Image (tube, rainbow, N blue to C red):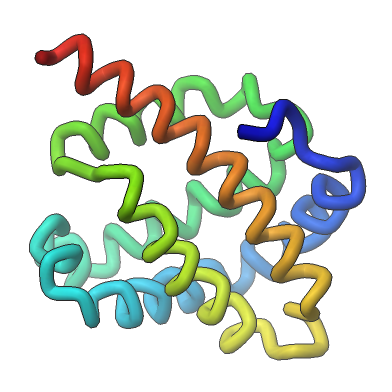
Length: 148
């Protein structure tokens, strides 16, 4: 697990904030469409929240919040704690995170286009996503251990 994100990654991720504000729900909607090709993952989600658009909106807001606060993650402590609890409640495991990345990163490029979502931007988001996933996995594993 990385201790910190590089300044370059932080700058790139923060710079995507305006695009995420405008297109975040479209990105997360497409991401879920990709992710739900795996029925075992789809079964973990409240499909009513998907159909209403609530879940894509919540995730889009979380991604935007991460982008805007990637240089001050302590501002996200409450959101991360809620996410960890939700993930533990639904049985999220470490092997789910790469599947989400494999759905999210192409959705970013698809929605924003190659001129905005360049290889450099996607690499920064891959690094940032992995960094956040490592934080979540560590906290979730501690929560699972505590519950056992």
